[in-house]
Image 1: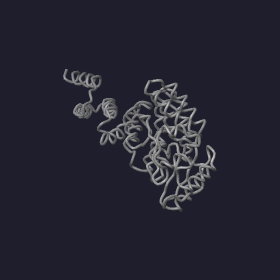
Image 2: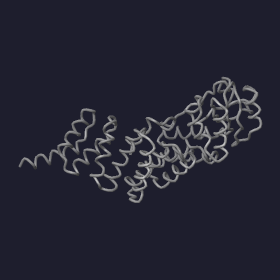
Image 3: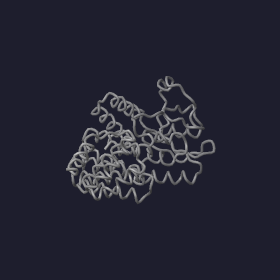
Image 4: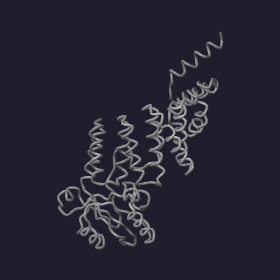
Length: 327
């Protein structure tokens, strides 16, 4: 379901393609050369959540203490550039940061988070993580670039063994498992990631996508209803991902449940905005054809062609119907 993911990914930072940069934390970490960091035995890998007021920071700290994912909260709540990197701030040396942060870094072990720290008029929570996590993520990226999906999966699994609440790794792993047609594994992976980010609409949409892959590509009819429920939940929570949700529901109804009448309304809504998603038009034309709305199928085909999409199989089907009607 490539087109569904394309539609989602425009609103999701730091997921695909598998590439990311070390965040630069304003007012906290001094600029350090990569070579110097690699050689520094006291350098620590950190995640950071930075907010403007203490009350917000305390609320985030309480969520962390209740088991929420640090990386997910960093991405959702942090106001600094590290937010786009799931809070990752790279490698830092305790002797080259502000005193309050230095004291926390010297105290924290891998996997531990600090209390709320006041840094340069802002408020932060820092977590020390294993430097091997970034190495595994980078290795996964290289493996994907070389089309070595099994190796990439292994690298992401290794990262999760080091940081069990790494939502970024769950997302990347689940998507790669889908690519490898490991549909059950993908569902388990993304559902696990959702447990750490239960309020994240993007995670809900990814879980719905996993159900859809299993139902359509894996021929697992039992997952179709789960997909519909998840997409309905996405629609109930806001309009931001409505086109992707409608596309997913349309695909479920058309391909998994063979209910083209039910698919039509959803695919029409998706096509209103998804002008760059060819599969939306393909399925919409197919649904019109299956429900014998041939004129509408022709109109959608011409619209798709204007947008640069060519569907010779659908055109041949429609041409055959036209010829038969003229006899």
